[in-house]
Image: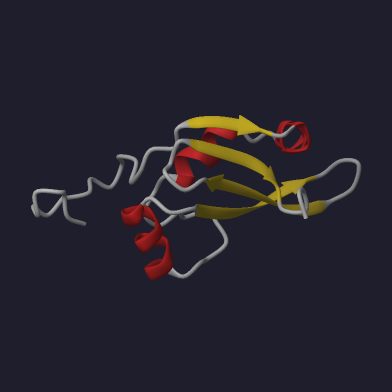
Length: 111
């Protein structure tokens, strides 16, 4: 990645690859994450990595381009819950264009 001055930025592995702005969590996603014992902050930290290890694989070139150009960045996570039944639900962390706001939501919300 290059800065506005044309210098190459070096990304440190443990530092966030981009800002998320204000973070909002839908009530459905919050409830699911609470039942699964997953903190929203865990998903947010993983979302901000260049290559999220716990996420559903995605096209790396598209992800890097979206991060660099401050376009929408979406990371999808499988979340396992054991009650009331064993189920894997997809949770999406979406940073909107401009990177001023991020929404954590269930994949089936807002369709």
